[in-house]
Amino acid sequence: MSRWGKGALLVLAALGAVYAGAQPTAYRCKVGGTVTYSQLPCPGGGGREVGAKPHRVTDKAKEPPQDRAVLAKRASLTPEDRQECRALDQRLREEERALQKLGPAATIQDEMPLVYSKKKFRELKC
Image (cartoon, rainbow, N blue to C red; front, side, top):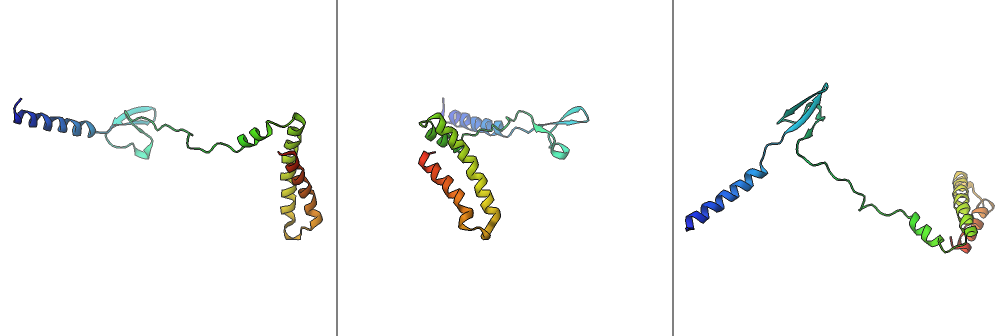
């Protein structure tokens, strides 16, 4: 092939690639049960692009729940200890809420049930 032939072929290939990417967008609109196709976006934004792939939603980037770490840690405990840990989880939440409701008026005596629950939580290695 001659030098000009190769150049012309290269130009045609480039134009074909540009044209393929610059195809007009078509929109599928549904108004009152009637489906119409248009080159302009649908009034009210209710339509979708024809040929466009919907966005894939994945949760790969989402952090794993912290419950997995708790479950793994408690797997080595006896069933009785696991049950006690679950009860302590609930008790700790309730005692913390009660202490927060008291606010700055809380005394050491008000805090002691929470302290004992946390101590038991650590001793059980929940």
